[in-house]
Length: 217
Image (cartoon, rainbow, N blue to C red; front, side, top):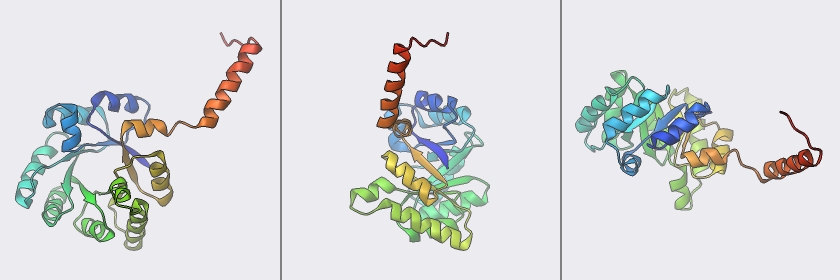
């Protein structure tokens, strides 16, 4: 499974990238706002830092305007994936931008039918939002599983990018179901390394090492 980092904070991306934990980055207007940076400036810095796709989102809602914005974003770097919303206009923009040779991430997906339309429109990535479905008492993992089945049934190449991941369990379940990519905030990715039994075992080893006066250097 590929790991995308869901942030516009350059320092957090750099830390994970040094460990080989970054296959790409996803940003959106909300994350750009939190970073306090200019969208073009911070997107360029991120795209220069990582080798994989960097999703940069349009802010227009009408197809022609999305296409124009998408073309501008795509010029930032070769690894930009233009992010468009899963609306009819967004699907139109996806189709045009894809046919022009751009990567496109279709975001805000909440149904299998939407994901099917995105694949037909040529999306590189489809971003189903797990956490937001959980918020309204629906199981976001059911959506990931449905999309996986549909795409496998018909051989669609659109990659499932599990988004709105809020917990380590979301990460595990997405991997088990077969999502191609997960995008998660840096803190969730770091928490994947934690387990109380690891801490307990390490504590015991260190105490034994101290008692035996074990020294490596």
